Length: 331
Image 1: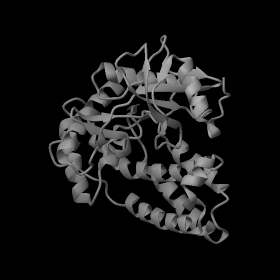
Image 2: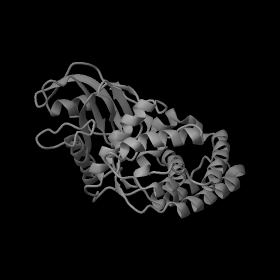
Image 3: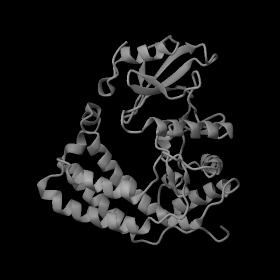
Image 4: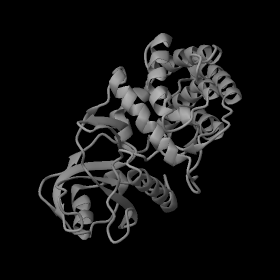
């Protein structure tokens, strides 16, 4: 048996893990685009799941989520699938979906093909609105016990601590960067005051949404948390303000067939955008010791990147100071 080493996970280790659980592998491993975890696609047969030939295996990054938090993600996915919410759920083997191997954990999923959802396609956005309404209807039925919530502390203040020791911010940019960063954190913290939290997908963007002949479907609930409903909606709003309002109206008209939406949550969009932006910078800093990050994000260690972030943060500060989106009468 090969030892489990996440940062240098070898094909032999992956194959050993799969074979230990009875998988007969008929192809090589194709690495999929994932940095937080290690994800591979392959063809194979599993007696416990007859009829499935194309698979995805996900090896979880150690110490990111606890076993209880991973299981809570899977249980939420099973709830959604049972409610006919289109989501790709993991396979259970002997009652387990979080599968231990050599000190780590992995999960098996059937591979479902599809094309990326188009965020400017009104018909697709309408279908997505219905599915998000159903997802949130299930999400409201219970709460996470182990998974955290979106918070100013986790996404802003803890990220500020990480960035304060980031070695890549050049000395000449330290003052302007942290000055504007602290202004954005102060504004976003002030405006992020959600009144209701529910279980969410948590990372609902075009890269985690696909569409096939049956319609849109969700993949990768790895970032599911407690949070406001608008967190699963705002990343679908692209373009100018008029475009965003149009897409929002299309989605919410369908969403509200299944789940009520509080228009007051629209004021959380820009704080959530700031939280995502700052958390992303800190995420790269946290993961930099993983060789995959230096290889795939080389620009993070350049002066130009930090110069650009100052400009981006200034723009975000401006957006935080503008009136939020507002719905048409009738909502």
